[in-house]
Image (cartoon, rainbow, N blue to C red; front, side):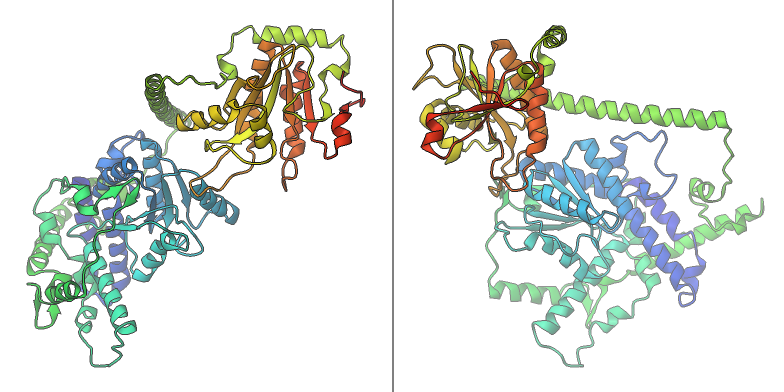
Length: 617
């Protein structure tokens, strides 16, 4: 634990000494003490008034807790190796702290606890399964049932449940049908604290369950666990106190994670050789005959003499300080710890009522701190993206790769607005049909264009795997370029949602006048399980903006298939309006093709305007 945690751990133990003297009458108080100690072991910021103001996120969030210090190194190791994590905690407040930590480190995450509504819960599960999200934050009770999270291969428990079956149910979320990877379960336990003895008790319960259900030992003669049951709650709270108080500083050590967790390769844990039956029986015998076992009683599961002695010394010191301070005032009414004045003041000192000016000043400071924190996170994200882009450019250069991706609207010259103003002025005197979509019966791979260039539009996913059938096959017959360029872009990581690849396709056949070009909009996502999403409207919207810029520059017409044809539940209404908004209404000649099913229709292609139904020349 950190020095701050040890400081508050001692203060919590000394806060109510009466409860230790009469345990039967003060059992509820002792249970409250146990709960407070577990919060302290998790993170001291779970207590009000501990986090320093102004509330700015930083390394202090990690350094204040031994668990978060270790978790920070653990997650960095798992992220670098390509693993995905389920992170469980008993407390939603601890999940809040972990969520702040994820934002600070820039890890992608989803979160589900008891307060999350049903539809949001299902959406979070779906996103984690279909997108490369690193961490799923869950409360043990809310995430214990009704979930299939086989995308994760690592389960981490920040704290343990008193009932070990709840933890087993939670870990089972990653062991559902469809899991084909080894799953590693990691449990964080505060050394020499009440958590250690709680985990040992839980292990004893699981061993007893295994003995009864699997071994068939239903006899009433097995009374060995009774010695553990006799252990009083007050004794549990004293566990590990001697080692904990032996030093005032932090007890967080450096560890080699790979030697502890095992080997990992390509984002998967490498399963070691399973122990033989003889080795398992030998380990069990060694466990039964360790140095802390005497006359059938396991002394490693209860406080030692040194722990009890350290507790008595702490109590005597507390009482001495209370007697001295009682002579100076009526401080005996205050049951807070004198060992930590800040803790006493935080719990008993009456807060000064702030004036409206002071409240406004505090509000402004908090807003400034929040804005500063947001700016730092954005700056960190921008630098990370710039570094990744620079690395990608160097990789492309080493492979002599040239991207066919269109630039975004923001990177175009500033005269775009003046051009649009001039164009809108011209449209006021033109036929309204010039700004409407033309609906054509024909083959979009052979656009019905005049002397101008023609841009054919097709939607693809971000996997880099060329499809079969439909427009994919038609385009492959028309030109060898689409498949070659698209698959190469996939290998070079040049496919992102909203991106557009634009290139000519006149290698096999061409028109007498004008050039035919193909624009591939990356509007769908394919996950690792080969599950294809629907067309994402945001990506389609961004892609159409880029196509407008290219068509404007080349003075070209745009030719689209009936996007989403025969797709159940597809939003054609919204798609049509996006096409009109970004292309037709801005003066780009726009044609939507309906592929004819009869030869007669192919011989006599027709077109109609969206408003007047006129033929296309």
